[in-house]
Image (cartoon, rainbow, N blue to C red; front, side, top):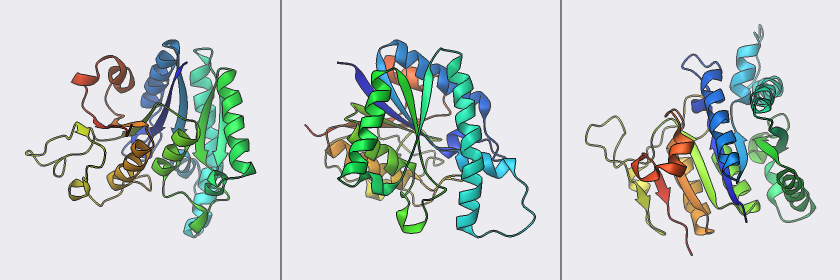
Length: 257
């Protein structure tokens, strides 16, 4: 049976300091996903970045509230984001399919079964699912906390072996990563509480942060899925996590048996 990995790429990984999409890094990550597939590993991609894409595409000369901004920028940006993925993966002969979802689709019932069936048939036909929240209709209480939560739900729905959360730092540290005395926590045993080490701030371009990743990793690992938090800005991070994991900085949550 093929290994199945869900990879979540955060907004801070896909955007430059000026907020524009980092196409070079996006291309490098696509190269690595293509490599994973050659290793007979099934991949589901959960990608942020649509709102950041849309914000840079449009110049708005009138005020919009936060919901209107998110709806407008995500609608425009999602087209650009998936179009770029389409072009990049096409170079490897890989077909991609877009899955836009909402929190209600993960409640038990027909919508849940339909979404799982859709993604299953995509994988069975070698189509790479690219998942994002449907921000054009998901607002306030209907929204996921962020794409960390979404990727965790996808990993459980699709019975993945591993969930990889790519951020812009190496993992969870014993204190702030900028502190010279900070030590990377390499392994988290089931049930271990790291809440004292988690910084409260959110990422610059996304809704999440390390607290969100820790919450998701704790829940998903309890369901028997290995979770890795790693730095998506590191060169060859995905291939190194497969081939040179012991030498590659990351935090790994050991799954419950």
